[in-house]
Length: 294
Image (cartoon, rainbow, N blue to C red; front, top):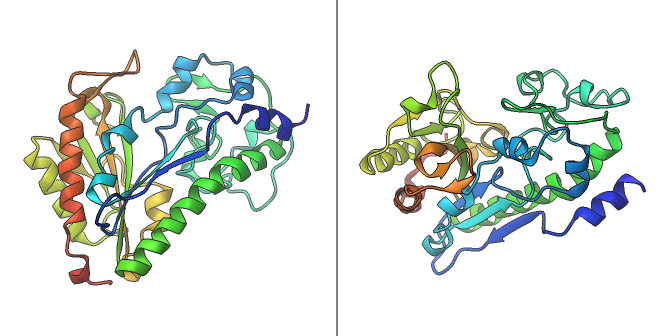
């Protein structure tokens, strides 16, 4: 059975889930690239890890935490596939040669810090779980995943960005993630509730991160900027404030809303979702027309 056939048999769920804005639209797009819970059967068969270990890479329930976005006038885009299968918050060809059976083409980025840590577009390992694969992959398998999963996600996201910017002249993209409650950077995430990343001021107008921080603090959350998460590929690629496209990343401490061992919602889930609704309302109300494109 060839790789295309195996992958086609695995596709029992859409690659991307998009919920359009309801009611009056605002120039805000919310995306969740890592909350997908679909693990193709062929991927699980190739993995030396149990499903629970693979799920450590998930941003579990983040799409639900921001589920009020459409009712506030924002579109919500979420990847339906697992991050450990293919990561759309990476360059398309950010790959580790050690994962593949043959030499990679020269256009592949094999030298990034994310590849070096094992977390490229196709991850070699999961945090605390060791190597994923029982075998070396063919480069053709990467191409199939890019074609069927990675590109559909970014085509939908780029289309939304273009449409919203054309309508409003400005667009804010909120890239939503979660972080484990311990082991994040030199200072554990137990010290902080939320990390906002704007690539040290490069991906959005300062008023965006200022308003976001103010809203989160008003909700009683502890906030840090750009440490240890300053933003990934999404904020780097889409965030072009000088063109009127603003991108902000948010990382939420998982201990606030879920049982990290059981992958279940915790009693704090409703409180965090309410705080994210307030955040979305604050960002939706920003006066984008007054935001200077620098």
